[in-house]
Amino acid sequence: MNYRRVFEDGYSYFLTMVTYRRKALLVEYIDELREAFRHSKLKYHYHIEAIVILPDHLHMIITPQNVKEYPLIVKQIKRSFVYNLPQHIKDQAKMDLSPSQYKRKHAGIWQSRYYEHTIRNEKDMNEKIVYMQNNPIKHGLCKTYTEWEYSSFYSRIQRMRPTRINENDKSRRS
Figure 1 (tube, rainbow, N blue to C red):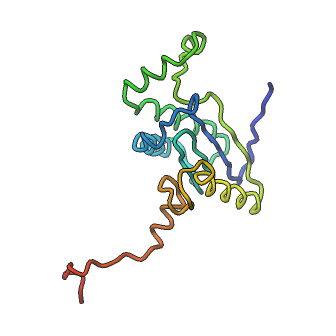
Figure 2: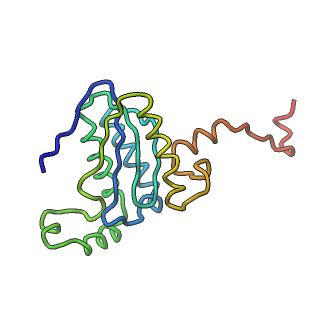
Figure 3: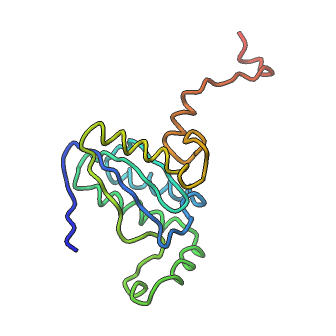
């Protein structure tokens, strides 16, 4: 198969990364995944427009400063996540590999490829965001997207909620 990626300056990219054999690792090792993202942001300049992390896959919309770097961003996130995992998880993942995968040094954590879609307009962006919001619901992980804490939508909603003042905290009273 001769797949060619599209590199268009000024566009955002909808990306999907899936764990190998759909192993439910991402939520369980969310701190390691967050560290992988932090590490990638030190190397590459990009903005995460939206993200949703499910146990075995994630969807994100990113806008890279240098469009040719988005495959490198994905590679960095995947590599850093594998590096950050506990050794027993990495060892266990290698047990599921075929001899040829093992020989090629496949880690057994991520699927080799990822899905990419160039977002061309506001309608396209809105469709992908709605898809991402509904993904945890579709997989039976929550009833509304506002309940799924492993998404940028959840954190935005949390920031919008007014904070309650503890009535026993006299230091906040005027």
